[in-house]
Amino acid sequence: MQRKKEEKSHSLKKFSIEEHLWELKSRVIKIVIFFMVSTVVTFQFAWDIFAVLSKPLVILIGTGEFHFIYTKLTEGFITELKISFIFAIFLTLPFFFFQFYKFVAPGLYKQEKVIVAPYLIFSPILFMMGAFLVYFVVMPITWRFFASFQNLNYLSGTPIKLEAKISEYLDLVIELFISFGIAFQLPIVLVMLTKLKIITISQLVKFRRYSIVLIFILAAILTPPDVLSQIILALPLMLLYEISILCCKKVNPK
Image 1 (cartoon, rainbow, N blue to C red):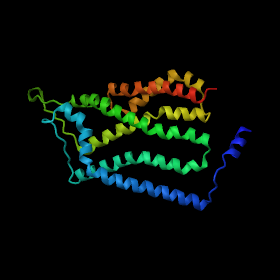
Image 2 (spheres, helix red, strand yellow):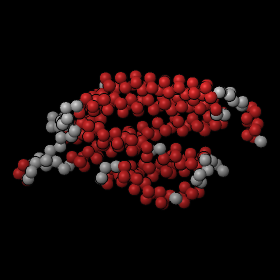
Image 3 (cartoon, rainbow, N blue to C red):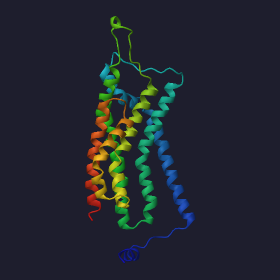
């Protein structure tokens, strides 16, 4: 009865299939244009972006003692394109979510809009939190572990010196950003599953001890092969799991 009253009080505007397709086309065109403009802008600052990404490693080794290399003639240019392309995607994602919401909003009731909007808002925020954790915590600790394999003492054996390739370094950093960013979507996924009644709050509470094991397994898969970086990812995920339970209780008080 309540649903029927809501449907009467909040009449939705009806669109034909052609109008839906036209609306979808216009949204896609806006997203593509935004992405192209973002790519052009980020291409102008590609090496400045790379300088920021490489700063933790440069500080660790020393500015005068370290340099990056590239071993293929086209590697420098391709890396520059990759930087601009990837960070253009990062810039476009919030705009994409906004356009997606604007596309589906006419088909949602007011109460449904209130439910959908937080997911679209908090998803990029949680992703950025994961990326910041990588940059300020994981990268300095992990790079110190990898750099420890250097052997610059010629008297103790064969000298080993780190000379990182720009393309491989960029791939590793982006992999960490994406891994942590996706892992930090845990609260959104769990709240959504409870909202859809696929899982219950009591199941989440009972599953807590098993979730710790699974989180450490996930951390071992997503992070480089050192214990510290795995713990750095596992601890926030365990905290996010507890936060997810609290959020589920608030969203589904019954």
